[in-house]
Image (cartoon, rainbow over all chains, first blue to last red):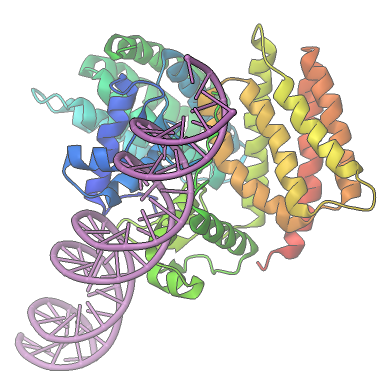
Length: 226
Length: 226
DNA sequence: CAATTTAATATTGTATACAAAACTATAATA
DNA sequence: TATTATAGTTTTGTATACAATATTAAATTG
């Protein structure tokens, strides 16, 4: 449970391809229902079909693409409703994680604090605002630490799958530092409540996520084509 | 939302390999922490590395295997606790689906009844008890129909991912027809409550799943090596 | 002209080849 | 001896080749 599952860690090409396709699909660059042809995409991106296949499989896992029963891959459009449902799912999973954390006898909270302080430190460097990509990674890391604390492997697996899409959305919406300032203050309150094993942490979490979701979805809708 | 996502539908080899590895890992044939070598497995199963890589990726998606950061694939043991957590997750997701179904104005319940009647019909053929593999597919299909009714794509994606492991467990535990008789009676009660949009359907669902989980886990533990 | 069959094309699934990276074991050095 | 270098091996990631299946277009038939 300590090692981190990082698909494509060594597969730089597939990683890059996946990221690009994921973002494009979320933004609506591909029409819903249109078909993704391995060789076409391979030519466009200037590589062979091998890493493309890998990327397609991951996209399918994330629900952005559909594996047709006769072979082939079809784009599933990403709508505003889906974003909403995704965020609701995130809340459901994280709340479950937190409930289990509170119910467990002992737990390790170091990773939670480390990830929190990493974000705080990064934000506190004067005159050097972090990029949206940077902060999204750190923000996600905090929440991943929380889910990992639950020591519930299936829950973590489910969370990780949707987290990829979630992180892409965070990057797209290009959060500014002031917004993140809000977020990390909420992270601190939450982390403090968690180590106290205070049941109020649940409502703090619900508050935090609901608030974040509202801001993010509003920004996302402006960027989406459809 | 109408098309069904079936990875490996055309890829028979990879499908077979995945199924076999999945079952073996659940049963504890591979030691937790041991490394899966593509070429080794390919030689054992008498095929090339291509379908093996595909299968490994799917296993990773299901949380049975870990992608090491320097490349390579490590087996994550499947413990009794994980089974318990998995089943709890299943309940969480299906309950969420049902809540959304009840909240929605209109919904299509044909697939739910069709899958239910398929199971009933199959069980009612005298002197021809269905195999565990057969019934597990039909049972899973009923629950998938339920989740699909929620028209919540991210929720369905998450459910599908864990359903693969769940179905494998159903097959392993080799349910007998009498047990299934119980299950499908519960299915019918549940389906009836759902079309009435009766909130009691939620407790019926909780009951059904909790009951099934208890039976299944007990049987599973007898089959697991660890 | 509509429907069906047949041929041509496109696309995927698997096998193989090769290069880059990671791991292992041996040798060298302090 | 313990530690670092180094050579050798293993293993993966990507590219390419080929065969089987799907899709599309054309031809045929009623």
